[in-house]
Length: 238
Image (cartoon, rainbow, N blue to C red; front, side):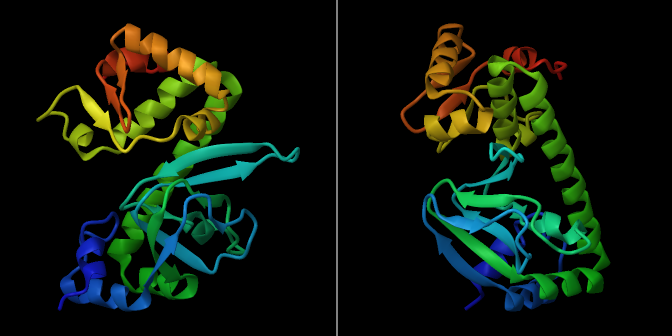
């Protein structure tokens, strides 16, 4: 029976252009692991022993300031690599910490084996390099948001980031709002990601719901007005 991991790999960036034989080779390097909600996967500045691909669940990646304050720099969704920033570190240490926001199923690649695979497959190296560039850019934007944007702007920016990861939003020429982000993050996790209190988050989302920008549901959030969110985040309308 064909490996479920092969099926998943061929539907994941940056492996979707690999041949069946190459996918099977990559599959042979990996194993699956389950991380429970709240479980730490790795810490910043630890030696990188693995590179990870999320199959199911949600992972937060964060960095810590010298005073110990946590800055959450991203949310990993299924099909996304993480721990891969260690590939551009000369000493191959993790540049961030990763923790499961929900019960998560993760595909794990031994670091050296994954690096060797990239060297042997330039087209995958190219895709991973593009992915790395995008992640670093998003990290810089996240840190800039925390330093220079107020609470509503930070919340709007994060909602847009989560929105942009939805396949139906990426294909928005064929579809329009409303867009549902589901399952949505718990409000305490969303507040942490935005660097605001839970009460502040709840107040702002309630106002946006009254303004018909979003709709907060029990297990999801619906974005009804993308342009309004972009304006709130201080972004140009597209």
